Length: 166
Image 1 (spheres, one colour):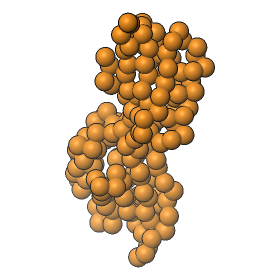
Image 2 (cartoon, rainbow, N blue to C red):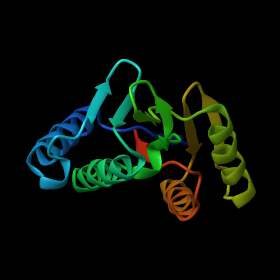
Image 3 (spheres, rainbow, N blue to C red):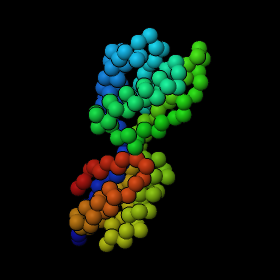
């Protein structure tokens, strides 16, 4: 009987790298002249996978977001996995912005990945949704690598990670 090979498609961000980027951004904001005396803060809530940015004006919020986004990119955190919220007024003449981190594939994205694999009509390659990941399986490793290349070429709104290849 032929062996079946498989790999898992997931997504997510490395929370340690996000934490490092936030620390670097806080240091830069503390040293920059244009932020002197400004009421700005950056908070990372690991449990909820969320960044909370607070600033005293919309202009400073945009500057603060540029600093944070630059640090995230330098730490190789996929910006596609950030769900950036709108700037909303908060109490005390401040504005806030929530940035949610996409830690797992949601149901719609998983369905899109599975549908893309089925539409590619690769020989005997199947996709099965298992919770927050999609398992792609097939008898030929070459077909699985073709499926990986096809998935890399498409945009699903998040950065896909391929793991557990066997």
